[in-house]
Length: 288
Ligand SMILES: Nc1ncnc2c1ncn2[C@@H]1O[C@H](COP(=O)(O)OP(=O)(O)OP(=O)(O)O)[C@@H](O)[C@H]1O
Ligand SMILES: [Mg+2]
View 1: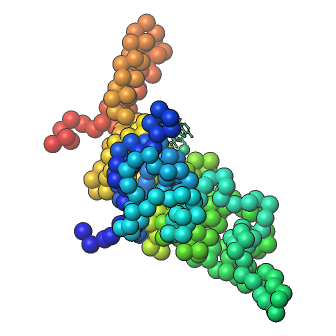
View 2: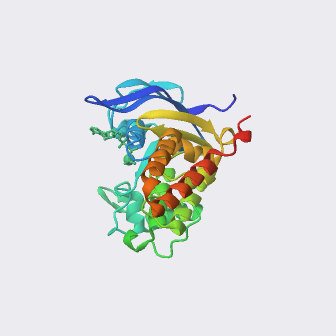
């Protein structure tokens, strides 16, 4: 393997008292690739990124950034190594202008002697240019971020992270609150960031969003890793199956069939469900 990983984790685990939020997760994240972290509610996705982002410390296991072992004390430590996290809700301030949101306290300054003030023209220009690189055309950088669409808001946060030197961009469920079209917009920005050479960790519970953009897939289920695959090692249906937990789907099928024994309308639902699960598992002759 010639490509070197940005981030490696080995046997990562996190316990909250006696709750096991994450256990035994081993994976690598590469520059210029999108690594999707998939899992249902409570699977451990947020716990996983909080550790990488420096918000929480792992209870066990090791984390290496560009080959060097680290134990983050705070998000500042992670940021200093180029790890930037875009949280769904905290990403932008809706009432502030686009350029203000882009800089958030790190605006370029003009100075004359002891006087200094924000170089608004420069800040505006940089914000517009950087957003342009992500393929988004902002007519007026004075407009408040609240007037942008959900997908565009995410893009402000993504463009900002890239401009301030992020090597690894973590996106926590950036599409979960968006409709189909806006989700598409965010998926496009994810690819833009990847094409610019950033490593991207994309957290989602939607395999239909992960599949078209992902280079690698880490599947979590109840805090455990269900596997770690490159795109050519897995199919979309297998991905969905693993996320849902194949055994659990089969059990649900049996329960539905039992409940449907005396109920005609439920019988049809049970049959359709069984068919869908079968289709997901694929025909038996596929498993060579
Ligand atoms: N601070 C905490 N204290 C105790 N338990 C926690 C804490 N944070 C998470 N957990 C537990 O750890 C498990 C994993 O939670 P986590 O938030 O990582 O899941 P998730 O995959 O992000 O879920 P969701 O899709 O709902 O956001 C859950 O069972 C959760 O209840
Ligand atoms: Mg979560």
